[in-house]
Length: 334
Image 1 (spheres, rainbow, N blue to C red):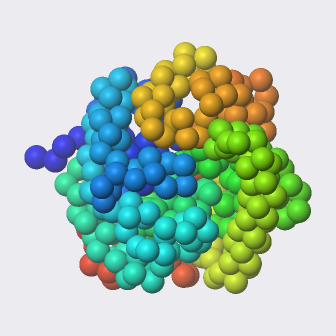
Image 2 (cartoon, rainbow, N blue to C red):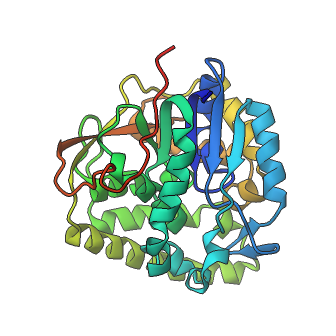
C-alpha cells in the first residue's frame, strides 16, 4: 500500500527545504505527514569549501530539524556538487550551467526520483525554482521539466538564502518564462547588480572575513564576479528557447505570522554549520527576511512565496510518457 503524505518537498541539499519552506512545513504537518527528499546529501570526507561546511554533521542537523518540525526525511545520497566533479571546486562554476557529465546523468536521476514518487501518494509536491543558479538546485529543477505546467499539484519554492538577494527571484522567473500576477518585472542589469552587490557585501560571509584589509579587498572582486555572473545568465536567457510557461504566485499567499517565523528560525538554526555561514545570528536572519518581505507584502515580518506554472502551448516540453517514466500519483484531497 502506498504511503500517504500531505506534501512532499524536494530539497537539493540537507537544509534547503527548511531554509526555504520552514513555515510551510510547520503549517502542513498539522494537516498530515510531510516528507522531505534530499537529492545531493553525500560528501567525500569532511571539507569546508567557499565558507560552507560539507560533512557528516549535516545529517545530524537534518534529523534535529525533522524532529523539531515533525517531518520525515529521506536522502537519495547523490554527491554534493563540490565533491562530484573537479570543475565545481571553482566557485564560479557552481553557479553556471551544469557540466556535461551532470546533464548526461539527469535521466537516471529523474528515473530514480520519479520511481520513488510513484510509490507515494500526496496532495502537493514542492520543488525549488533554482534562484541563484547553484548547479545542484538547477539540476533539481530540471528533473521536473517533463511535468512543469502540466500538474496542478506541482508548486515551486523560492530558494533561500539566494532568494534574499535583491532581484534574484525576478531574474530567475524571467529566465524561466513570463511572470504574471504580482510579479516584479526584472530590473535592468546595472540596477540589479548594484543592489545585489551592496546586499552581498552585508552578508555574514563577507562581514566575517578577517583581517579587515581582506574584507575591503574582497568587495570589488566579489562585486565584479556578481556582475559577470548576472550578465552571463542574462545572455543565456536570451539565447534559450523557452516553452510557453507563465508563472503566478499561489493564490492566498500572505506574509508569515510572528509565530511561524519564530518556529522557522528555530528550525533553521538547527542547521548550525549552514546557518552561521549565511547569517550572523537570528536577528541578522530576521533583518534580511524582513527586507525581502517588504518587496512583496507591506508590514510582513517575512514571506515564503510559492509559484505555479501554466502552459499556453506544450511545444518544447518533453512528453513524460515518451520517456517511459512513471507519472507520480496524487493523493485525493483530504
